Image: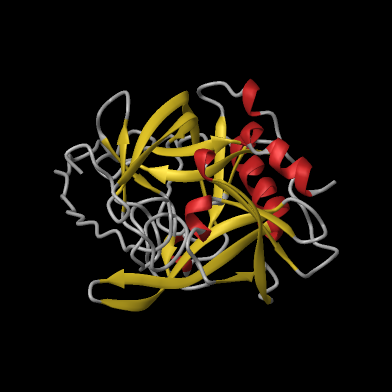
Length: 299
């Protein structure tokens, strides 16, 4: 995916056009682990439902075929007044408020590396998302967004582009901290993922396809404590991510590493994957799993 954005039961990762599979990353314009444009191909399988999930990483474009059907039109009785549907402005206002509050803290991450295509090695780029957790330039994202990258470029909300370095990684939880040389940045507020309840509002912000930066989608918390198996087709290894938050907020390539927020604007999760063979099924790592890493890096 571009910087303006890193199946039987197997899902491809969401990296922007890159070699990365289906985590919510996006290639320089399309990968699927929502992280880099050219990302690895990763397959996600729901451990409990044995159905495919794709890591929301940037790197690989996700092709979707849509068929529009025309519904039959039934004549209405024009003699009866039509009652306009009521709109719940409370939820709408909450989403607008959260988007305005948090978008300045969300960044796009471009990861540049090398893809081994036997017998050649070719440059690859993947796009993902991340969010600022300290005013001194510390950014949280997915490990799969930055793994194997030789260079990282972060684009801030104000369009500034900066090189970033890796501070810490936790591959087991698919977490990574990177840093840019900047001060005075606006950090997010960290929420309490242990108190999440099924049915509450969930808002996702990120850079789908690495191009549509600062995109906002909304849904609900569909489930908690979910487990998925990630099958990396490049390294031929598998890993299990547990305790995940399930949401029906739209998750696309390039969203990997972006924040999942509650109605107050606090981060409750880090977007990491979406199901490749089902609609409206995404997964996020609970923010509580990242708090000790953040604390250690900000001492």
